[in-house]
Image (tube, helix red, strand yellow):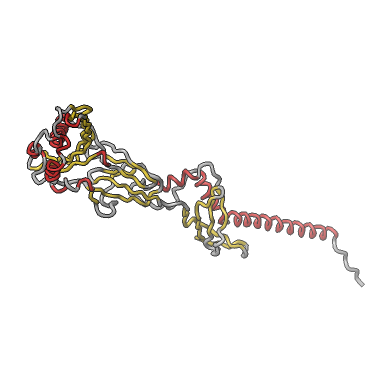
Length: 366
């Protein structure tokens, strides 16, 4: 019988080494591929896209955010953007997935500046690649970055004469902001029968982001002092220095009226500077017929502290002026001195080219 040859020990040694090398190669290859694919998979997570959004906002760049224009024409259209940007200064921005994010292909993230919710980020998948037949790698893009901010809800009212002009943040208000109908001023009721007179108007400005700067100017362009009550602004008529000729005429006319009261002049003396159908004439007649006796028999009056002030020109045919003076008269029959003060506002109107008194108000009774 022939003997079988023994296998060579060297063969087995090489065989084992080959198997070990082959196993090592596949371990190295698979380990490298798996690591690479896992890195690719990790880098493709949507959170990295949100990180880029956060980094951009943190740097002060909010150009990707969609802000509405200002709700009011009296504010800069970018006021929301600028206010939002200022609110982020010194704060750390973070994010977390929204609890309402249910779509894996379009996740939603909420951004916070410290603890304040500032934006919602929507991202979406634009492509998908399979790795190792079990992993799906998404490519993402930002669908939208919607800021969360307070819109303008501040409202103000401005009540002024219609001959004045109001400005909000330097922009003139007009009939677009007017609310209701112009209202009559009661003190112009009589003068209004002879000429056009101012009315009171109210403007309402709403949708402001912040408290505005409000300015009112009169017909001459002079700034008028405002009364402020919360969000309500108002202005009345402001008197100015009286032109010399108007002051002289007003004081003279007021003295004539005072002298009619004292019986030193007749009613005819003042009729030329009253309207022809003046309601004052019957009042003077009644006084002359019933009360004039109080000042009968007096010495020549003396005047002191004469002044004309608070000149207000409402329009080319209408103005008012306040006249003040003290008058002293000695009454021999009663052995007494009568002290009389005139402090009246006179409303002058231009009728047929002549300035006449339409109305007068006693300032001491206000």
